[in-house]
Each structure stands twice: as C-alpha cells, then as structure tokens.
Image (cartoon, rainbow, N blue to C red; front, side):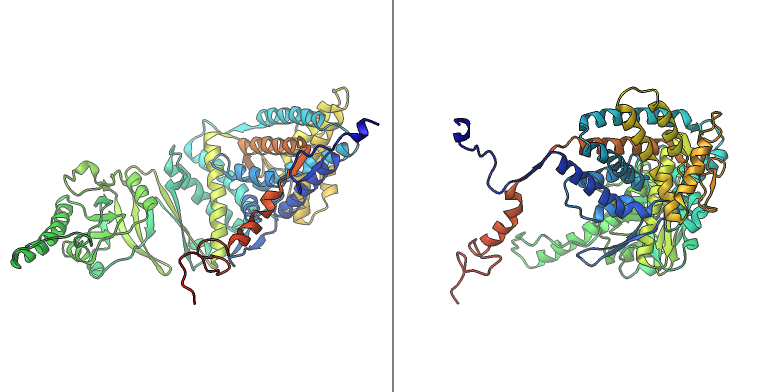
Amino acid sequence: MASMMQPQIILLKEGTDTSQGKAQLVSNINACTAVADVVRTTLGPRGMDKLIHDANGSVTISNDGATIMKLLDIVHPAAKILVDIAKSQDSEVVGDGTTTVVLLAAEFLREAKPFIEDGVHPQNLIRSYRTACNLAIDKVKSLATSIEGKSLEEKKSLLSKCAQTTLNSKLIGGEKEFFATMVVNAVIAIGTDDRLNMIGIKKVPGGNMRDSFLVDGVAFKKTFSYAGFEQQPKKFLNPKILLLNIELELKSEKENAEIRLSDPSQYQSIVDAEWNIIYEKLDKCVQSGAKVVLSRLAIGDLATQYFADRDIFCAGRVAEEDLQRVAAASGGTVQTTVNNVIDEVLGTCEVFEEKQVGNERFNIFSGCPSGRTATIVLRGGADQFIEEAERSLHDAIMIVRRALKNSTVVAGGGAIDMEISRYLRQHARSILGKSQLFINSYAKALEIIPRQLCDNAGFDATDVLNKLRQKHAHASGEGAPYGVDINTGGIADSFANFVWEPAVVKINAINAATEAACLVLSVDETVKNPKSESAQGDAAAMGGRGRGGAFRGGRGRGMRRR
C-alpha cells in the first residue's frame, strides 16, 4: 500500500516524446527499409533514374545513390544513418557503390526484424553480424585478383574494364568504352597526385556525347575581357606563362584618402604617378619574357590594349582552381608582385591556343612539362544530362584511382556477393547455438544485390538466383566468378566478361552497411525533445516584439509613428 502512495517522478520536460523497446526498434528498421526502397530501382546497368524537384525549383535527374540520398532531405533520425553511409561511400575513399551500401544495410535490418519480433536480444544479433562481416571481408580479399606488375598498356586495358563496369549503370552507359578510355587517360595523366581537383571537368551544352574530349593539360572558359582583346594572338608554341594574383588596372587613390595641395600644378603630378605605377607593372610583365599572362584578379582595358600591342595574350579573373591547375601543369608559381620575376617562376607548355567549343571560347594549355593535370570537356544536349554525366565520370574517376592504388579487383554482377553468401552459409553450419541462424540471415541478405540486378532488368530473380546458387555450390570453386548476365537474363562468368570492380569498394560497402545495421539495432530508446519542435514557432512569435519587428511589421524601437 505504501508503495502505491509514492509520488510520480517527473524526469523529462512535459511534452517530451519517448519511445522504447521492441516497437520503436521495429519502427526504426521500417524507416530504413523505406529509404532503401527509394534507391532500390537505381541499381545496376538497367537501373532507373530519379527526377528530384526541390523547393527552389531546380530539377536533378540522377541514379547515383549518394546524390539521391542527399537531395531527399530525410528527417527520420534512424534513416539519416543510411544517408551518412551513402555519403561516406561516395567520399574520397571509394566513390562508387553508394546504392549497394544502402541496400545492404537495409537488407541486414530486414533480415534481423523477425528475430527482434521473436524476442532475440539485439546484442546477440550485433555480435553475429560483426563476425559475419569479418569473415566476408577475409573472403573478398582471398578472391581478389591483383593487376600489379603488368605493362602500362595492359594496366590501361584492365582499368578501362573497371571504369566500364561503373559507367554501365549510368546515364552515359551507351558510350561507356569512349568515356572509360578518357577517364583512364586522365587518371594516369595526374599520376600519383592525390588531389582530385587536378582533373577538371568543364561542361559545354550542345553537340552530342561523342564531341566530348580530353585535354592533356588545362582548359578553361574564356574569361571576361576588355577592348583590345581581339588584337591579341590566340596561339603560341612553347610560350612562357606568367601567373599573377594582382590587379593590373588603373587604380585611383582610395576614396577616403586626403591629399592637400598648395599649388594646382601639383595635381597633375599625382595623376601621373597613378599612371606611372600601372605602366611600371606592365613593363615588368613584358620584360619577364612571358607571352601568356593570367591573373586571378582583373586585368583592365589599359593593360589589355598594352599587351595586345606587344603580342602578348592576357586573361583576368581566372578561377582560383584553374590557376592552380595551370601552375601545377606548367611548373609555374603564382606571383603576388611583378617585381623580380625570374625565369624559375614562369611556367611553360608546348601549345597554347584559344579554341571555339560549342558556343564558348576555351583557353587550352596542352603538352605541359609537369603533366600532373588533365581536363575533360563534356558535351551534351540538356543541362541536367551534362550534370548527371559529370557525376557519372566522378564515380568512374574514383574507381580507377582506387584500382590503380589498391590494385586488386573482384568479379562484379553479383558474383562476389553470391560467393560470400555461399561461404557464410557453409560456415554457419559449423556453429553451435543461435548464431547459426543469425549468420545465415546475414548470408541471405547479401543475395539482395544479384536479386535486385535481376528485378531492375525485368528478369525472373528466383530463377536466376537458383542457377547462381547451383553454380556457386561446386566444390571445385569454378563457379565463384559467375554473376548475373544482364544481356541474356541468365548467368555468366563476370570475370571473363570483364565485369570488374575494385576489391576495396566491396570491402568498404560490406563494412559500412554492417556498421550502420548494428548501430540501428543497438538503439533501444528514442527521446524527442519538445523544445526542438517548438523552437521555430517561438521564433515566429517573437517576430512582432523584437527590435524593428522583422516578421510582424510591429513598431520596434526607433520606428516613426505613421
């Protein structure tokens, strides 16, 4: 009786929403699977695209998992984890496999759901999933084939196959051979340089995809120019290049400067001094022997005409990243002064020319001595199409860079997933207790990749998966490289058909998906703070009372009575 009389302890603020136990864990799993259902149909060569229309009215057409996840603006706290793993997969480390990682994480959770509903403790599942993840990664490493020690031509061919596998599922998949060769040449051109911005991608609307080309050097759009520009030469052989970060304009004295004159004739000497300063700068540029002058800041009309009279090409307001790429390629150094410009700070290239590309003029530096940069000029019809082509090439560039550094590849087309699944099922039989069931469910979840590839291509997934299971069950291991054949709807040797992907992509995807699934499973209570929901309402309510009445138009302090 005494215990019934004890007062209720209020721990959290009134209005705080708490949900805990089995029901909220199942709710989180449902939210994650709902997110995966959005990107599910974009997987593989026959994947569909998504058209995303945002509040600003801009339209994005894409089938890149990470791009779609970023644009969806997901608010559910558990489902946001899937957005984070898609972003991490798309980051500098890997670049591709974003849809794969979201699908795997959701499928691991979907397989865990019946166990949670039956009362299994989440920690038992998490332990088994982590064990299965380590086994799967070891299996990928053992199945990976190295492309090290090959000649440059062989390596180019192998890397091109990896790029084609990535481009297969993109909008530009129809021209995959053309773009794969371009991407491989671009990545080999920058060598060991880790900076991705050393490969520039410039977009020019108009023409068709085949009009795209690779510049072994730097290309950028012609900058704003003044009168006199047309008189400058538009082509040089082996020119010296001067890179500046200063304005070459006639600058009057600052507005707030005060000059006191005792004699009106002195005014002319001040005006002359301003002119002498700019002429001195221009003379020093000419004396340096440079034939191409680029500056990040403006080059005025006086300077443009001055250079034109002396057969020198100049461009002002060049974008920072383009200037840095010219510096890296030509071996020059960006100067912040024109005093003491020595030969060591000047860059050079074999050919500089200004060229018409579509409706745009491009300044192109090719045959650069350092050669640590390349530029892909993309052509295409619609702006959305070119944007998607750029995202596709980004994925392909990342994949080729990964394959070049971690020179091991595995069979794609769902082959590696089926082989790991078979291996884990076999391993599960040797385990005592409930873990056998959990590892089995993990193995089953891995089959989502080949299953989804079939569904997206319109094939009978059950029929194809049965064929794959039978092929992979051979004790000799000859069926290990067999995956889904997208062209015929049957199965084929993915390795022999050059459907390859870097092993690091698959390892990263399995790792990230397992971590995300374990993270969602380990949450047993969700607490929603009421303040965060009402904060916006409070801000709106305060509008009329604040100084100046920003929202309600109220008369704040200092406003006149009308």
